[in-house]
Image (cartoon, rainbow, N blue to C red):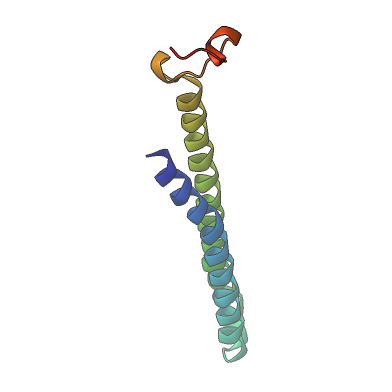
Length: 104
């Protein structure tokens, strides 16, 4: 199951910021486009609202990136702990010199 966590974390780590910054650019472009065709008394309010929406998308993208990093780290810790604590029957022991050439 830790592999699923690694895949989920990696996708959130890679796609979250990418989608967040893409949405930021789109909403900033939209905000400045709206300001161009509005009377001067409304420009500041509309620009502030548009920039606020764009920054919210940036925050969501960064949060997804941080969450993905945490999921990857936790999954790696679980994998390392599972690989270090193998049952006694699965542990590899170096062969002794006498058993190397014997038939038994």
